[in-house]
Length: 354
Image 1 (cartoon, helix red, strand yellow):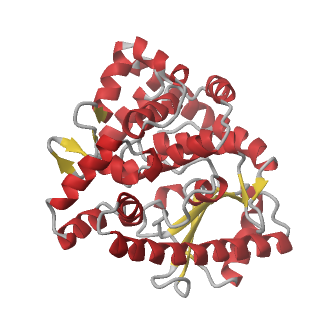
Image 2: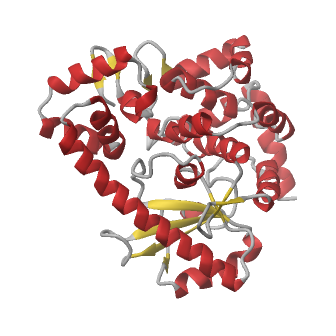
């Protein structure tokens, strides 16, 4: 986090520059003037938000030439990533894959036509039907990608995600993650999400002048929210950078919010989507209709949960993780009593092992 005068400024360095208010620009300039360039760069490198901060600083006229150069280096890198991803989709088409679809992060950048330089992940995520697993793995390995798990981080979820690394792509190599389910996490009951995703992949959109397929705008917003809530427990690494997806997409696309709320009900998604939208609105002033999240505050239990995730006065997010904390977040996200949430999971696991 980037603390200044008792407030976390991280979200300001992640905003679309033209959405910054005059007061926010003044605040960022004051913060920058009190730090040497090297000290500041070390901070944003640690937070892993360098291209976003570079874009903002060059826009508001802070050390403009230096930060434009930094941002342009990411722009060049991300053009190469687009070429890599486009090549993957082209090869997948030749082997008969019909379900491969670009997911959050880079998918949002392309679909929302956002600044291509504002992307700094070392991987991209793609959804695919597990029935195509064999041909997808063969296709990627034939393209020089090594099929492996990164540091064993998802060793318990081999049926949910497959990871591929190509050491010859970009300077440090490049990862492609194929998600066979909505997200790869414990405690999550996601059968209905997966059914929804299978339907939405059929109507995926093709990015202009490419072979890349990505979910339609409303679908992508819905699954980005589920990814943030369940894949990263709202606020865990990479933290606020996750909400860039929500903000960029909401500002650029015509989202059917009523349809999203309908899906939330049908998929028994609890309050996951609503909380994600509230945090984005609170920290980024993301243009989300208040009807999307207002009702969650009618419950004292929900208010306590939201206060756990976000300190509204300082704009600091909860960043500590443990298995117990993650379980709490997942149970609280159901929007029900803990007893009801635990009972729901017990019934689910008994059914799965019957």
